[in-house]
Length: 261
Image 1 (tube, rainbow, N blue to C red):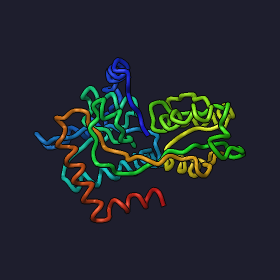
Image 2: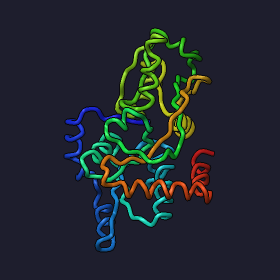
Image 3: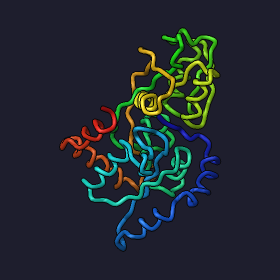
């Protein structure tokens, strides 16, 4: 994934409604911290399975969720994970209503240039084109004259845009993945472009009538935990240290195996 918020005004407007998204339960949880103990507010997405999603017991789970929990346990810090969605999550960190973001955020130079401060990469993800199950599309050349659906501001959008002129297809932008998938299923778009592990998981678990053609994926880029205020460097340092430790002790690989095997 994921997004590069370019419109500051829109981010501020989103941030104005963020306090309403925090549930009473989470507010109560935050208040339970020992007096004077720092509780880091971490924003995340809501529908980015298998990295963050809600399970059948209405529990928030996923690779990102488990990695953050393991790192926090290793480093001994408290946090409040708030499921805000991508745009609102980015806006919250930008205006200081959250301290950090973990949401399958691709580490890329454009984000670094705009003020994102990333951790070490914690997962190398590729982006792939996806077509309808009965589609005859097997290569980029087959997309000529057709439309490709993308999710706004994502690495998948960047990947599609990097190829559209060369292969002669158009791009249509959506705000969420389910709507993007449905556009392909309905036949309005010939393909969509999404992070490969997310797409593979959605096809499998939701039984989507879609498929991933071989050889239509990017080289890949790492996901990173991100802050946008240098004053929160302490949290970033703890994340990096904890990530190194859980990779060394096997917990990291166990988390990946839990969701991807």
